Amino acid sequence: MLRENICLIKGEIMSSPEVAFRIFDRCLTALGLIREGKKHRNERIDQALFALYTALNETKAYVEMLESGKRRDRKKEYAIAKLWHDASVPLRDIDPDLADRCFMKGSYWMEPDVWTDAMIKRKRIKLDQVLKSIRAILLKK
Image 1 (cartoon, one colour):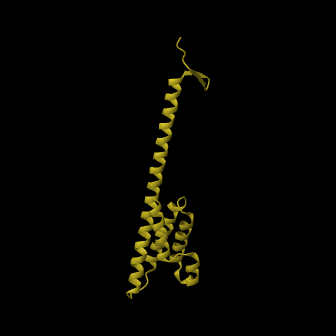
Image 2 (spheres, helix red, strand yellow):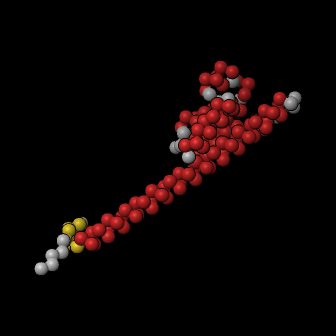
Image 3 (tube, helix red, strand yellow):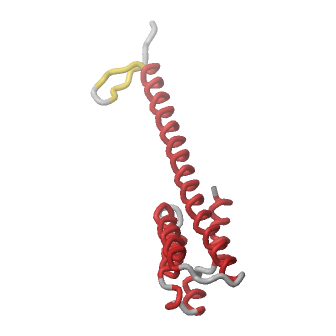
């Protein structure tokens, strides 16, 4: 006599092959969601890194311009501040500390004359310090 194993799931009576198929199907669905979540996270990291590199490059170019003897450009400093503030937003969920430092970097460029060297050091917003943190994110990815 052939006996089929049966299970009761959510009020439904199912044979073992049906149960196995449903479990397998749900596992595949879960794996797909995990893969999609990882892809979404990688896209968010890429967006954050792009925003950071944009702010960093514009800042470096402006600083080099100043070091070559050109005059300050408040309009350009406001634009740089916006780039740093914008870069801080996608970083919130990735690296909250770096997001805060980028926001502070933007605040610095809004009022650079207010910031002392000690404040810059304490907030860890020197370009080389920020670049080091960006590289850490890139290597984690």
